[in-house]
Length: 439
Ligand code: ASP
Image 1 (spheres, rainbow, N blue to C red):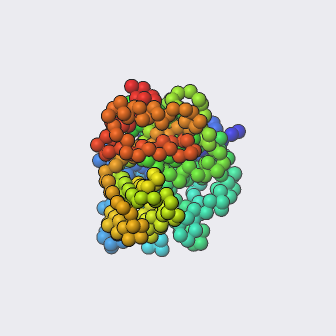
Image 2 (image 1 turned 90 degrees about the vertical axis):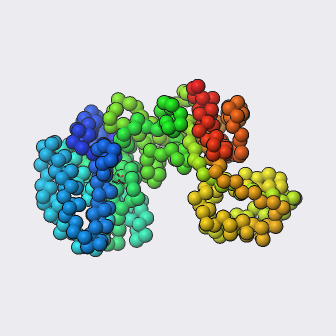
Image 3 (image 1 turned 45 degrees about the vertical axis):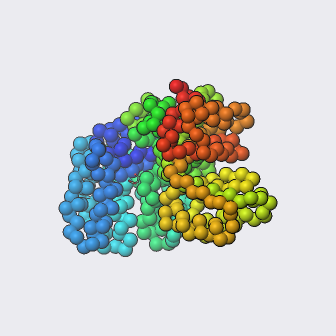
């Protein structure tokens, strides 16, 4: 039987009603055999995520402040879930054990990981699935870097012993000493992907509270269409420009084994969601897959007569930026000019020094700095070898009176990047969306 691995995020495990939905989803398909869960998230706006409460708990313990007043509401939330769903797990014993371990070395990560641990304990009992702790299966080196092959072996060997299981997301342990190590926030997505790889799953279903990715930011474009399918490379481009539904690192394990990731909505399980796969499927629909953008870039333009004849000019310019520890996004060049597009947050207090070095080392005729530029990525694998996409982008922007400050198309032809004035950002996205998708 083929295997599907599911991951449910914080909003999907936030309260008993949500966990009932999980059971319906899991039971609807016998191939749904391994389930990774997050810690309970917010039940309503203004509520706290369990992980945030646990981080506070750690801080309180670090500062020798009595921690019971914080521990109590955390326990309360799990008790409520267990009571309402009639789950038979001894939470008193679990919390006794947690208290007992608070003195242990490395207790900070241990505390924060208990959110996922307890979720998995309860949900495994509720589904009648085995509980498989990820602690000694997901392994990190001393620096907290994932040991991906060791992890894959350990997970695969353990999963083989369980027909069906629930696993906690977000943590594993240091291979060296067995102490808990956490992924960065949102890391249960990565756990799910690792489990999918180890289980040789046919699909990794990532269940959240939206029906997949949208073709544009709904705060800018009214009712954007959902993205039905997208390739990993396109996803990466869109996520980099701010459109994200998943932890960035979650793509890699699934991708290594060519496992498609299906983003689904726990509250609307009938929606097909977005499928992310190696090539992307389907040819129907728009030539573009999605549009995303970010504000607040700084463009530094360097002008020098005969620059194109000066061997090593670009290398020297890049070395200056590198020495300042600044990473750039784009470097559009002309015959006698070179521009660098850099996220303004990267520059902060370094801009003056960089400009000074440019002046001294490059001896330019002029340097111009422009802040508040917005970058928009128009992404689509179907653009490849298709004539006229950039022309349509430019036409749409011109028709809407948006001046293009920069235009960059990689030779991979998977995306076109346009830079516009910050004030034109939203208008530009709406114009491009209307041109390619619908008015
Ligand atoms: N609970 C963790 C967080 O809030 C991890 C996760 O949900 O993926 O970041």
